[in-house]
Length: 268
Image (cartoon, rainbow, N blue to C red):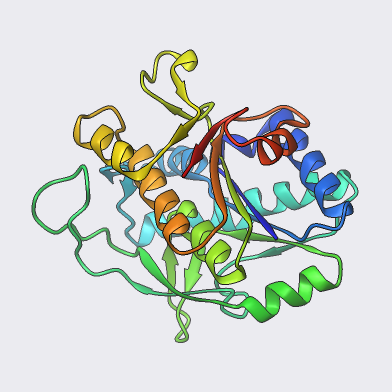
């Protein structure tokens, strides 16, 4: 079982189709695959078109009712459809899902929390959720029938409340629940960089102690902070391998899985 998480920048243009062909090829070889996707940049763009001002604290989106509506339209709608369409064109059999799809991602509202890289006091992020369950039976039912579940980063409660959830968190929880052998986070950078302006400064492998020090030193910042934290949370919870790779070309996903750190950053 492999979980592939696509960031918003990976769900556009030729990059999406390259990843889709790789995912379809891996699935055709008999490996069960689940895709989780976000859509932060596209959500922010729609918010601005609607006259909203996107707000983030330490890389996390503050989500009020208006921001949540934008997220539903972009992430639960257009991007989920576009991802499924790319997989379909690659010969796969995708099924689009979100938290309200039989609680495939069950969630509760997150209480005010102190954020690493943010202010010292607890921060309320609004309509943001914490994952409390994954509908493993539904995912396995779809996988067993030859389908690839494509899960948007939207959670839901039993009462039908809808929450924004960081896509890395959703991917982690899905990977943990399914006992995935690998979790690959496809981002807009080629991996974890010591200098964000220099792609050649990519770190091929990194341990948790070094990563936390890089956060404290201000080397790892903004949206990369929760990504790194969630990567190590998955490793601690038993996911075999976690990788961050950039918007990759065809075949790169398979190469990174075969040789960790060859294309992106492997978390150990």
